[in-house]
Length: 258
Image (cartoon, rainbow, N blue to C red):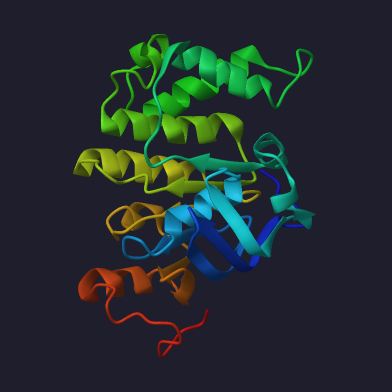
């Protein structure tokens, strides 16, 4: 893989967003770069998932102020479909079930959204899919079943990572990919995300806990509190949070580099 001469960036400035009239994001400042794996941590209700959904364009999440630019393009001016085509991907915390649509058909359709009949490589798609299933320790029998229907929580989270692998987005946001998973599933998901991390793409992993980060080894860790990024640091910050919790983190905390 050749590292691009001009790295991709996702730049978020003074982002405010509300849900049902209640302000959740209160001025988020964040810059993501290709080649970096970033963790966003914080307590429940701090705004982590709101940030993910606001960036993706969910209609429930209304941006009231600020900006978000993907490689200089105004992300907030784009439709959800256009944001996806621009290279943004969101892995859901609670994936939906779709009856009657097989997982294999869903993945192939997603693949063809980025390709034409002329440049699509069915053989390569099948090889990559087989490799990704192996990474994720998934039974290929799941490919014949309806998307997420009757899947366990761990299988659903694996499917989100499988989608990311298929689409090869410029920036991926994974919303709590470790929630509800047992130790083995956390390892499988964490190791696979790390394997899929490319020098020409960036990944933002939203999580409460340090456990998945030992497999991901993030380049940067940011902490959200009360709708803003209150503290930033290296991967050692995640270990500190694991030991001390979040109560000590406040805006302008000593040692903050945000």
